[in-house]
Length: 491
Ligand code: MSP
Image 1 (cartoon, protein in one colour):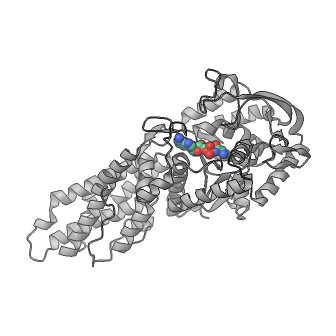
Image 2 (spheres, rainbow, N blue to C red):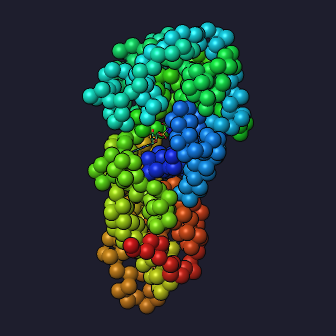
């Protein structure tokens, strides 16, 4: 039976256009699923938009629009961006999908019937920016540090979810790694947070305050807390495509550190309450700044990935995000750094290697060496295994480093062997060297395909091989090679 791999991104708030942060997580998920599909596994990749809640209601009102129309517009932009970035998601879920809404209502009713939801009063500090309740220890100078705004004290009649009763079970699952949280640092933070004590949480708002949400099936005066609604996307997104049984439980859920706590508590608790298996892994990547500063509307430094995609090659953007930030750690991005990596790495290293070798092949021809001296030069399978291990450990930036170190070696090999200087009669020595380099280029293209798919497809088409792992060690068949046009023009 084929192995399966299911990966998700958070569903992004449809209260504003996509920014570099949403592009980043989505590209990372895309790289992972493409890698697993290349391995021959059956993959499923879900992303989408989170379209309910007070934040969206308020933003739409300010824009003088009905929330539905508002989110329709924004979601269109997310979809367009993901298409542009060559994102290979198998479904795009919207929480205003009627199927999703129906399913969430069923879930709420079941939770209520089983006694996990009860009516009470709720009072706590709430940050609308986070759409989350904050504890006193979260506040810095009385404000939410992420949004730099004072939380509002909320006290109101509400329905509550018995989160507290899951404390021990959650701790156990996380500690014994049934639910693995990576990196370890995040796992330890979550354990500390749960140990400090989980309280029951409000899962509803009065409709007169928040009308833009899913109505509670057992009380029409209340709408459902946006997170409960949102979490269920990870399940409805599969059910919509009739692949729930095949892909649940999810292999890995990507997110940044801003939302690991809710994911590691409310989400698995809801699943446990309804006897679902919990996710296998949460991978928490870092937050990045722009030119050293927090990305924010006030600073006006929000990067619109669509603007980048209009100016630069999509593969340069994908490569830049994955290479520039150590996956799992905080990092920084800037347009300058993007251009630099495009020029120095994609254009000078990869682009030149490919174009130079194809030109040599056109001029001298190529020939498969009789005595394969490949192993002397490099071992493709060994490299593949190393990259595989890194990707399994979510070390995406390191995987790219390693592939590019190999590209450096190939460039050095051409430089050292100087196939243009050989004077044997029929060029056969040069032809064999060129063959070896082309084999290396094939390996590189296959390994890089999940990261920069368009470029690798172009190379594969030109040299007539297939992007598949089985091809790595196969001999090249096409000996009639012409010079390829530049893959990355210098900026
Ligand atoms: N709607 C919720 C998630 C619900 S999932 C059931 C939400 N949406 S969000 O639009 O705010 O997206 C947050 C996610 O966007 C982060 O967890 C991260 O994946 C990504 N990022 C947003 N800003 C980012 C950075 N500055 N850096 C890295 N990732 C960032 O939370």
